[in-house]
Image 1 (spheres, rainbow, N blue to C red):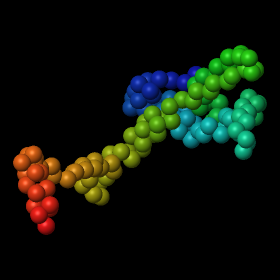
Image 2: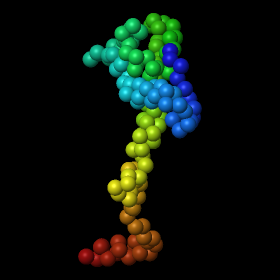
Image 3: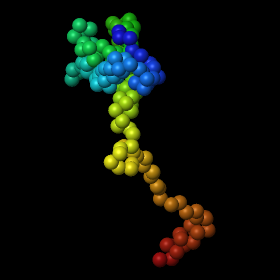
Image 4: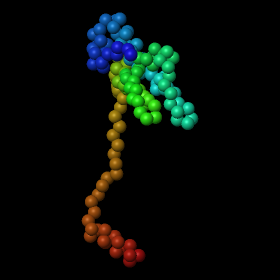
Length: 139
């Protein structure tokens, strides 16, 4: 397993660290952000899952694995593979590269909020319901 650093420490290094440390952190984050579960596992059309051999794993795949747990059971050995948080790595990279910051050429941020407005609700009394029902019955 690789020696992965915590998100908070990565942020600090990206802000205040040496150029060499920044480069190392960026490489780690890029490896995690670019990882895919198919780098580690494969499956066929029948749902049979196999784990790729450790010697066949790419450098990126090895860096993206957080934990592998093997548990013996009556069917053999159950494997659990946990990957590092890809979304956190993408957020840090986006922030580092200024993707999430407002752009100079326009006055709006790259991410916008969306407010949905539903239909207006009006209160109606039982008397009004009965009146409408009576009007309908008379027609």
